[in-house]
Image (cartoon, rainbow over all chains, first blue to last red; front, top):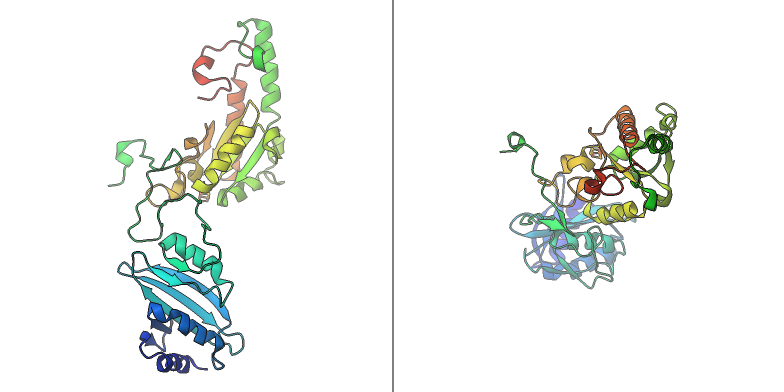
Length: 167
Length: 174
Ligand code: SF4
């Protein structure tokens, strides 16, 4: 299907669930409500016209006001693509995991969880993927403050001479 | 060396023995490669035919138990820091550390102002003998760093009592 038809199909099926959509440009997407996520993803995977059986990428975005989770879907049967965006709050945000639809989502969700502090409910093995297990904070958030020290190693390294200091 | 180390007055025989020991040490360095990032590729290059670090008696060693020198080349993350310290502690005395590249010298372009996860300098973890500047340093620069280390080893006192050893500790490191 064309991108336009895909977007319209989702818009028609989930009238209230869709916040906004763009069916052309470099990044056509459907922005949906967080509580409609599971239904929309399930529709994308199982609908006979869509059959999105491959998750190309899942990424978390901190825009400063809200958190976005972007699902980039691909169908190996029809070779069409669609991007699904979900908008959630910046604090204590929860989203249901899509590992039931694609196993590949597990690693992506771990990364988004540790970097942005989004909780994916129903993830099979929540843990840290890239950061040390006892790391505090979520580094890719806009309000992240660098650590002063980690395991007794001081983070700062002041310049040796004053005149080399950055203003 | 144990009880013999720094135990003798400065007589000719002990000074000459020191020279012989240092000569053996400086010309048979086994180095442990800690290639952590792009500098590591440049470090591997010195073992190749064009630069050939074996001319100076240094040979790569995979086990920390058999290594004399640790060449830290690349960006050190906090996750890696504990491993570096552990490997350093497994090395037998006398042990030396050469820090290669801006990242392991002071954090480089991943310095503390820009990166949350990289250690700003390997000298925050383990004592360093030679710093080689550059991003990355040319292989010649690493060879120069090795020669600098050899000169430093040549000046060490092994059997002869060293007034400074009280301050500097047994292995000559601060
Ligand atoms: S000093 Fe430069 S070349 Fe070396 S590891 Fe750091 S960024 Fe890479």
